[in-house]
Image 1: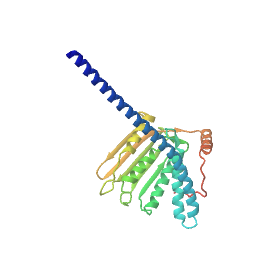
Image 2: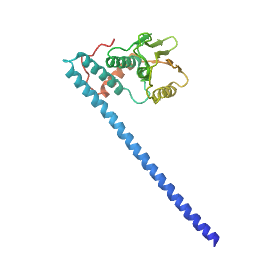
Image 3: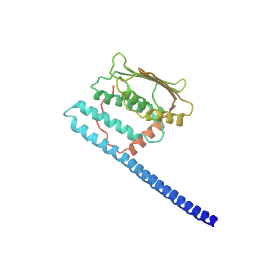
Image 4: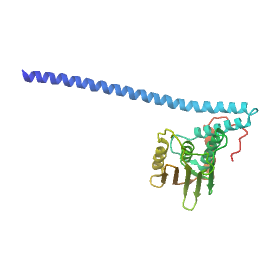
Length: 258
């Protein structure tokens, strides 16, 4: 009789446990499915909204040009930033470094407009950039990090951004220096820098070097990555293919970038 009761209650406990675990798994599957659906919807919105925003900026540029050339110029620059972001795929395909440099200049320019041209940023480029290509959005992430956390208005300690293309060893060298902002620190998730390291490791394996010197007063970064080159035929095909895929209105005239 005792054995019968033990088996009876054991089976009942096992059944309740199995039902509870099955319910938990079903609930987790529903949560995962909902997150997947939310992610897909967010991805679709991300595909639609930038195009809408870009076309809207084009409209604002045209309307603002007769009233404020500076405002129109800012809208133009923002539109170029959006266009480049739309052109770059989510994977690690290569991009011309000249396009990445132009994107950096546009981001600096739009921030100069925001801060009434008070930013002290010395951006220098050395070497032949023609037909050199790298994975996109690595260099600009470093610059955006400086703009966010650095003291960019001190004339005594201007931000230093030095980009060198060394054809002898086939490497690109990026060296940056900036003083840190004083006072309360901005909240930062650190995702930008972590993402850079992850993408560099994924694409270049052990062929890159990233060194960061982070003190209470300043921040220095040294990055070296190998580069490849693109032939004239490949470049022509890439430009044609890009124009076919990117159905965006082109604004004219384009502003000059210093």
